[in-house]
Amino acid sequence: MSFELRQLMDARQGENFRLHAQFLNPQLAKVLRTIGMDRFYERGEGCYLYDRDGERYLDFLSGFGVFALGRSHPVVKKALADAIDLDLPNLVQLDCALLPALLAEALVGRVHGGLERCFFSNSGAEAVECAIKFSRYATKRTRVLHADHSFHGLTNGALSLNGGAEFRRGFGPLLPGCDSVPFADLDRLGAELRRGDVAAFVVELIQGKGVYMADQAYWSGVQALCRKHGTLFVADEVQTGLGRTGMLWAHEHYGLEPDMVTVSKALSGGYVPVGATICSSEVFDAVYSKMERAVVHSTTFGRNQLAMAAGLATLQTLDDENIVERARATGEALSVALAPLVERYELFKEVRGKGLMIGLEFGEPASLRLKSRWKMLEAARKGLFSQLVVAPLFQRHRILTQVAADNVNIVKLLPPLIAGQEEVDYFAGALDDVLADAHRNSSLMFEFGKTLAKSALQRERV
Image (cartoon, rainbow, N blue to C red):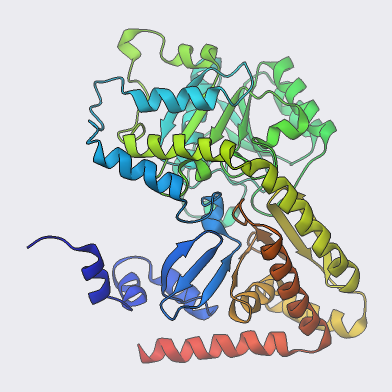
């Protein structure tokens, strides 16, 4: 009996949530049912997802930024099909295969001249783990700093650099010597670096959890302080890299030359797990200093041929289709389209970000009528209003977005970088509708409460 994927999926269609609840994560299934996002998606194409009923959803989440080229990009699909058809000798391990070398060459050619080596892994978290190990070994120091509100992954080392208490709670003790400093506070960073024991400062150029940003003076100061005190400046570009912010790398906005860059998410077009840590030959050669240390840091699947082929196709597509410039232009168009809504609605406080990494912040209104509703929501759960925006955007307008972090009223947008004016106009109109309802009456809260009640009844019947 041969294996037929389509036949298997057709036979088991509709069992998704039951199987997840039984064999995977039942709490995730509960969450999706509760907020009314329990859909049965069957395919994705470009900026859109399609469910089994043929409904189309605008994907402004893009797999947390993974599908920068949109879903099912034909160039990446062809590269993967070609790699399989070639029967490449994958993961020989005791080998120097061509495709990893070509992808490393392509990445190094797209960063500043001081970065000359790549280490490939399976994810952004693994890329950060590599940066921790390499920086400690190369500097012979043990401390690693990160910024508060940071997110660098959930493996043990990366979690040690995580600014979110909700992620860290109960998993300790974590790596010793990993301490946080306030984001955008040069004085505190300088005080820590002057101690002379900090191997690396690992930082996001735009913080993913909240879309928080710092100014040019801060970033110039970070680089100068790190160089002065012998600390490696590690730019975590896992989410911001490869065009997300309207430049290939977010650190280019500030004229920076970090000592290491971590990259993942968009690198394979969304098809194969892949991550990379790009660093100087000085750092790399300190770790791999002699033949006996040739495999002192490695990962089994890190240089797999499918990921490398997908990465090469992705980089070529970024160039051929002018993706980075498109992201910049669409980001500007989205900011222009949303600016009138900030003026119109007192609950809507700010649109911020760069390119197509955008945060929409909501806050307490001035009028007494709206202020009382706001305080009621905040008393029930801090940050609840942002969920009351995400839910109707999805249920009424079939737009997939996310709350930017726990306990904040910020909605985060990560559209595919191929999005254009059509998607901008549709999103702006949908958000206008949702905010108008929130300001006009309480039906937004009623609608969400109805969703919660309906989902609770459905869970009881299962």
